Every structure is written in C-alpha cells, then in structure tokens.
Length: 109
Image 1 (tube, one colour):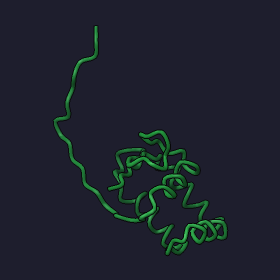
Image 2 (cartoon, helix red, strand yellow; image 1 turned 60 degrees about the horizontal axis):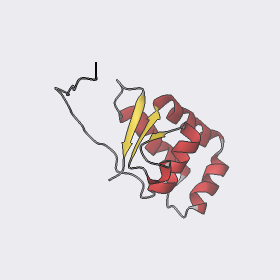
Image 3 (tube, helix red, strand yellow; image 1 turned 90 degrees about the vertical axis):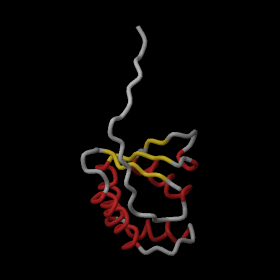
Image 4 (cartoon, helix red, strand yellow; image 1 turned 60 degrees about the vertical axis):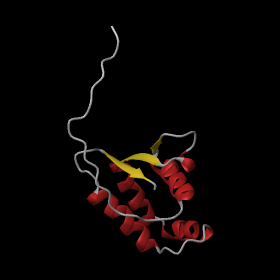
C-alpha cells in the first residue's frame, strides 16, 4: 500500500517584516545559534528556513547578554544596524509570526 495524495483545503500565507539584505550571514547566524532547518545544501543559500520559536527567544537573550560580541559581528559584516534594531527585528518575528506553530517560518524574496 502506498501513500495517498492529500491537499490543503485552506492555505493562507501572510508575510510580515521585510528586514535585512544579508541572507547569507543572517541564515548562517540562525543556523549556528538556533539550529535552523533549511531546504538547501547549506543554510547560507536557502530561501526558506524554519526556526524553533524558543530558539529565537534564546538568541534575543544571547544578544542582550553579549552585546559586544553582536556589535562586533554586525560591524564585521558592514551592516547599518544597531543592537537595538537587531533585537527589535527578532522580537517582532517572535511576536508576530504564527503563534499556532512552534516554528517561525522565514522566506527570502
């Protein structure tokens, strides 16, 4: 007996955000710090990531606990973000992403 085809009767996608222009570096950070799931050979090149919400909460706390490390990380990548911007963006992801899902789904487009 094989698998049977099923289809979604309701499929709704609504995107928020639109942050960062640094897919490679942000994906690498999420893969290293949050063990993100990605659909390519490496996280850096993936257009789709899934990150456990609790791991992003831990990342935000890590940023707050180690601001010097993240300031250096941001500066080394030449980004125009402050630590506060970084925290605000990740907190928004935590708060505004689908709360019925334990994962935060991220798409780059």
